[in-house]
Length: 247
Image (cartoon, rainbow, N blue to C red; front, side, top):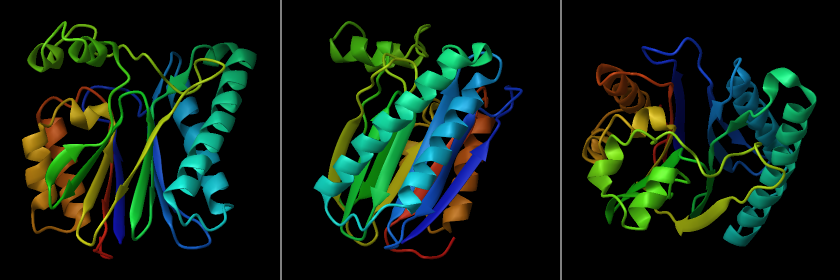
């Protein structure tokens, strides 16, 4: 199993409020995490950085998580703890009031992947069944699509596309969606912030992930393409290859 993490400020934003990383626990299982912060006065990068630091610490201290049920339990417990930390921090620091972050996190083992998310950062899988999105955006526009009020095409350029219905740290309590999938050698997982998924089509994501390139080359191509298509937002991604140990 190989993995690569990349983040880029993009071509427009002054600061990068995304954060992320790939971390290992004592049994060698990986936790891959992407967080896209939001809030004024650079509070977004406070929220995303605190989230990643907390998850890294808790993961590195975790015991062997050998089943999807154990992974789900760990994910929910840690996210609830971190939500409380973020919410309290924003309440106690005026410059951080209203801060929050999206989150997409994946516990990756040789046999299964447990993915949890809040907000509109996404997880995708490329396997023998094709390329598919594993997460469902917690956004106003996605709710309008789900309820049939607008089409997916309308959603692409909707003026309220950036409005989230759920984020980490903005409320006293938060719900995280968690699902587990079986993985096989050769499957590829992509986690990303909306700076990538808003610019690059599913078809292009699949094409680049399927290419006979290293993980670093694939990640670089995706970031380069998102910037070529405007780069209006920060761009962050993690690619996990369930076969390839090289970068």
